[in-house]
Length: 100
Image (cartoon, rainbow, N blue to C red):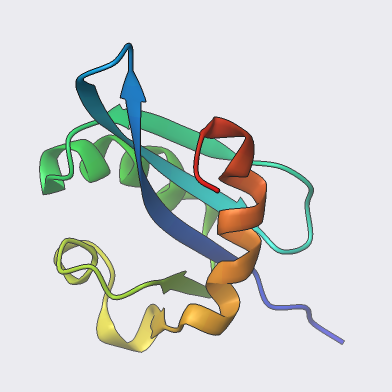
């Protein structure tokens, strides 16, 4: 039996200091604990591209996101699942970074 490789992406708003807003972009896999890869930056496609360059070589079967408009620029429709249900794992893994 083949197991599907399913990676999830999410972007989380946090602050450095009191007023410096940054976005933490994360990648997780339901089968592995913790965050597998991450980048910090703004909420643009240029920032996500940095994470995508790491993740795309992992040959995932599907990528799960929350539907933020940046993702379709990198993930083909047949490989992209938009679902809040699968995103629970991402939020839980990233919660120590400030999102509660």
